Image (cartoon, rainbow, N blue to C red):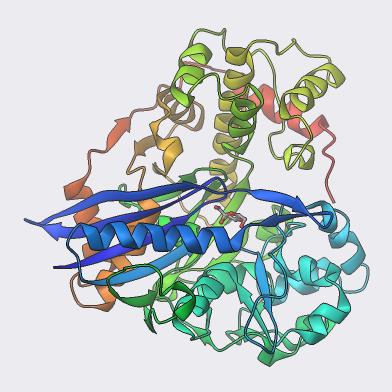
Length: 488
Ligand code: LFR
């Protein structure tokens, strides 16, 4: 039997999903799931990349045991991080995580040499201290000089599996080193971080066949005959493809560890307003752009849950949050202090103390405060987004794990005054599978793929009730004007 497999790896977990079109419906099955995370090694937070590859093979063994002998497979992961590969074809170190503190002040250092407006005009990419540009800027010069290749995480995994090295564009754009007009790595930015053009392998579009899994390191596993297709390797790019696209003027919110809120554009928008609001133009599959804003997202709740020793499930936390009185505190969830604090709970508690607001003590109070302030952030951004792209957004398509949080979906609809369509929660794996299916002719194109999503998954609609919280957004905006973020 033949099948399609999506390998979708996020910051906290990875999984292999089997997918196919059966009787006009897209069917998905989770075959394997494993934990992911970084560990402190040699003074840096590093991803355990060999472990990830081992888990992919363990998942492929399960696929074979299910009777599939021939598969197509695509790999997507988070963005911006990379592996340095030596002349011997081996990784030089485990890759450093983007949450490592090494880049905390890198933006201000680098932009004292090259102005922000100059970098934005070239790349159209948002300023995030963890972008590859700033990571390479802080990288050991010697290591960088010795590196034969610099491979983004999914490209590295594809390289280990097949022996073929490419740089896929949806992920490469998050380096903040691609030139929007030229469609290539920008020579001035490469020079700024002491990288030669050919250290990054050839740029390829999403949907390019990469090759068969052949690496002898993994001969110990009994796996199917596997053709790897370079899909939209940035998980957010896959999630946007996997969005149902409902509404005449729709925006998307990919809600997971990060909340990525934006619109799909056919031409980039890197004018003054986009620059001022730090919106990004990440390259999408099939010539599109993900015009979006990174918002801290469920990471904050994931940290709370972990700090409570996983005593409560996400559902239980949401149930407790439901019972707490609304809008007790305002928080700038995008403050850099929440990026990787020693204790998220203490950081939140300090924040409300510093800003003279009500205390956050119980798990329900903490969780509700995060959900509400995410919803407020979304509502505020939808208005900004609508203005910048001059499009009256009427529907927000929320996909990813966060689309299951009913409280947050309704709050977002009410505060933003737009219809919310929630689901599918598996949009990233779906987008990964769709690019494979489009590449192999099983699905015609993204339009047909999105129609398939609408016909295959149970999507929930939340109508806005704008009278529910009449002046909360206005008060929040006033708070945000006075809030003093700790940003690089
Ligand atoms: C989401 C995501 C975001 C990116 C962040 C860091 O998983 O890929 O799009 O900004 O992780 O890579």
